[in-house]
Image (tube, rainbow, N blue to C red; front, side):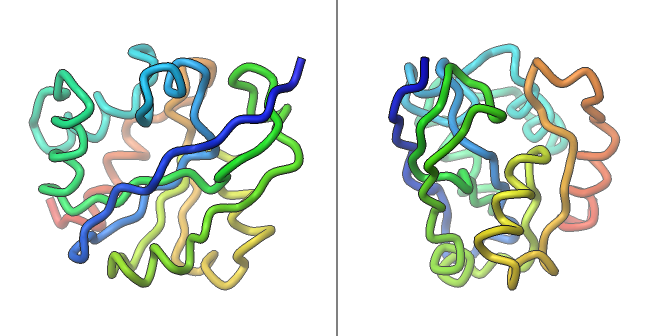
Length: 160
């Protein structure tokens, strides 16, 4: 059964180098009130691991990590009807105001966490596709996740 759900506010600083875009928060993320709240999701392990850091224990630590590492984070869908955590069930979506945040944070690159974020970005903001790369979803439901793909994309941005 579908339910109406709202996403989170973006996390960004004026000096962000990259905007990482998810599709929409999972049930678990909505329950904890922050991005990638399912401990089985590979996002935090992948991004923190790239910088040689442990995953922060709480939301404030994760927010601080993002700002310190110059990473902006948001979801391309701001609100929608959704069944559970299924991207395939998203309907009646309202797209996030990505151009405003992309300009405000100064990022030059967008990394889309999975196909759905890239698809919605393409549909609502085709002018931003030139700055975007579609990466394999970090979702635990994705058997084709590639840590190497994420590492290479982050290396291009952070010259590591």
